Image (tube, rainbow, N blue to C red; front, side):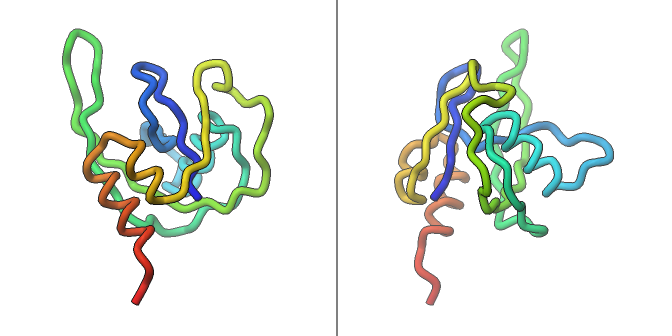
Amino acid sequence: MVLLVTSRETGRWVLPKGWAEKGLTGPELAAKEAFEEAGVIGEVTAEAVGSYSYSKAMPKARSMDCRVKVFLMRVDRLLKNWPEHKQRRRKWFTLPQAAMAVDDGELVTLLLRLAAPEV
């Protein structure tokens, strides 16, 4: 299962993510963003399962190309209130459902790859 959240700007379904922060590893940042944006607490894998690129809309009609590393998290707690609960919705999806709900092409591909049975 995948917990997606709505973006604050457009309301699109996205993975919780954030800007790199000095002193935080990828898994630590993933856990922090999952707590802030989706209200989940759990254990994040040490290694990323993949990555994707997207274009982040910036002020003054600019954009910035961003690369996101994706980490898995085993969710231990789902909070009723969290820092951004008034700014975002969250919803559980199966991997194929999540792939259909997101707009970023590389993220769609990553979700479908994770959904594919291993041979």
